[in-house]
Image (cartoon, rainbow, N blue to C red; front, side):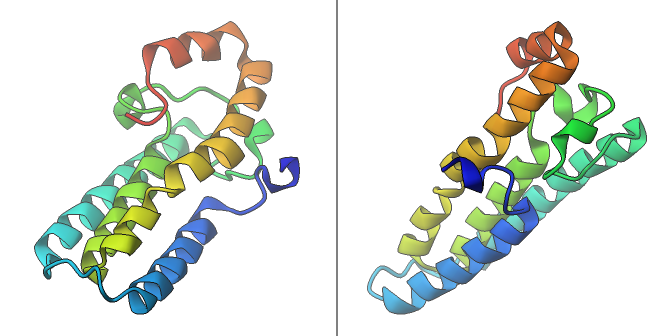
Amino acid sequence: MKKLELLIPPVMLVFIFMLLMSVISQRLELALLPALNEVAFIFALLGAAIAILGVLSFKQAKTTVNPTKPENSTSIVDTGVYRFTRNPMYLGMFLFLIGFGFYLSSLPALIFSLLFVPYMTRFQILPEERVLSETFGNEYKSYQHRVRRWL
């Protein structure tokens, strides 16, 4: 299981989830939701906005946005959207996937999107947190106590 840590870039994982959600929605057509394109759009737009705000905060702080190399982090970003969630980029991706599930009008695909959170937590966030704790020590631990991982 350790081999999967930091292996799949999160953006690629979103595309993998979207592909799997599409397959699930085609195979399990029995559990269709009513067309909720407005809801899909709202979730996708909100997700994209939160993720972009996270990226912009990292760029402004001049630290890495490469999720496979947390050891290249030069600072802890705790301003802007990072005051509310330690992982706005991943939260944004998750909200986008929920929007995609609504777009597909598929309850099984929507439920499948929920697996993004435990996968990201186990294979991306926890390894990142280990590295950041080692790099920034008590400063990062204090940030962990002030701000939730997801929301």
